[in-house]
Image (cartoon, rainbow, N blue to C red; front, side):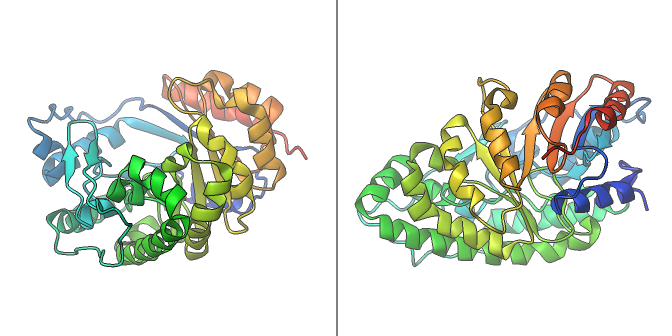
Length: 360
């Protein structure tokens, strides 16, 4: 059965299943977003009057979702996903006690592990925290409104390395990696155990309406899915990444049914070799970062991922799709892009069938 905002949902699910399985289905996977032709006459929500309204007013969040989803064409594997935004108030560092400071665009945490040594065993998620309780209300509101219409994001609640960096502070954690690497590795495993339990507490809420799951990273999978990441790793060597942080990432891939790793920024490209060794990591996103050239500028990294038998995700302008498919195998490739109109998006998807090749 189709969804209100995704009429070809049944075919989309089948394409995703094949993509995760590294099967070729006649073209690469492609998500094409565009303004919807003849959208419903729903007024655009006004700009939020306060930070509180933007991030905590469920009625306002609902209005924003209804407007954005109803005015967007979701072509190919693009997904309509109900969410409340991801500035950090519904993430694990907040539930562990880090004060979160929000503005109209994002948020940041104040570290709380300020002692000289790294002490973490006392940490536990406070399920009575007001933001934790709000996150549950947000998910349940999304589920109630999404049925037969769209999917619901399980959220963005932190990743390997980044949660500890929020708790400790980036500079202090860098010194920890040099002075007490064993302790940092222990803290990462401890943190990942906590992460897995938290995921398990939320997954039952969204699994039925999603027929699986999606998260802050707009992909879908027919089981437990999340995008792993470690943006802190931009600051460390491949040796440090492999010895301290890779065990926790592997633990995350063993817990999840489907995992993509979000390689964010060219400074993280040095860790791709280690990530390719993880047997249960199905996909890797290569994202050069703000102000950097297109992912196609780093063709050696893209081809390395494909040669290793991993699915590859890239975000590029629609004008670069043909070039991408002239150089990369369509098998396992996922392209995220946008077009100026629904008609242009449909033409692009038609062309992708012609441009795609299953290369060795």
